[in-house]
Length: 62
Figure 1 (cartoon, one colour):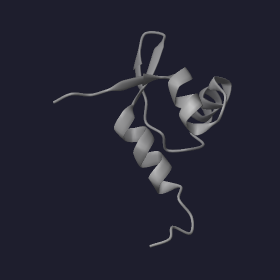
Figure 2 (cartoon, rainbow, N blue to C red):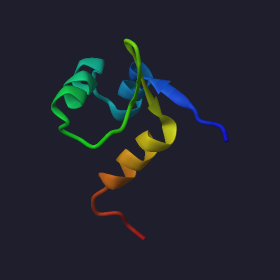
Figure 3 (tube, one colour):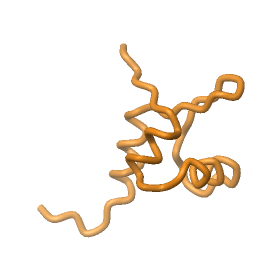
């Protein structure tokens, strides 16, 4: 089983938000975007980022 972990910078580029915004989301639990924390390091599983994007889709065309 391979788990690809992304940095906050990589996730911010994917989502189009700043790393500061991601930090606010983590602190306030504004969005359900799971993360992995080891000491001061914060990482996001690639599959969770993709699931987050899919969960926010509106008006998907068939």
